Image (cartoon, rainbow, N blue to C red; front, side):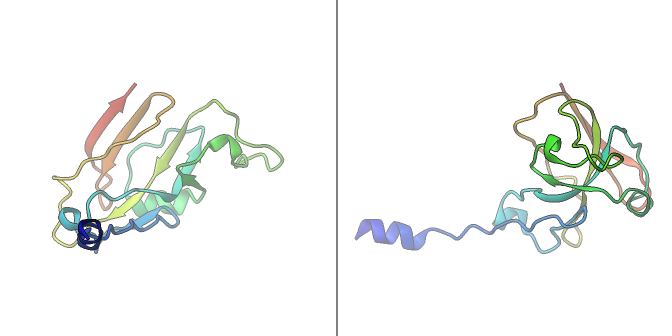
Length: 139
């Protein structure tokens, strides 16, 4: 009987939405109630180039390629060589536009990653102006 009560009282975990075409909509996500949001799905991807900060729409107009996150880029076809896959070594820019709940500034949010196979630099960029509002280096 006690086990049934514990199971019946457990709260349902809300599943994070998936990113589509480099955008994840967390505008209805309540971080206090719903918890951590996974940033999985289709991210914009630029192979073999480090792209500097710029407004989101400028980036989205110029760079259209996507990649599933998490994934291994070696399984992805090369953007400039149709008959080849991306090699196992190299570098790339990953971009995800995150739509936050109304009134949210993002100042109380945190970004973490797991299973990083190499050095990484994360920049948090304000989408309208392209200004860098946060940086994290992981080596």
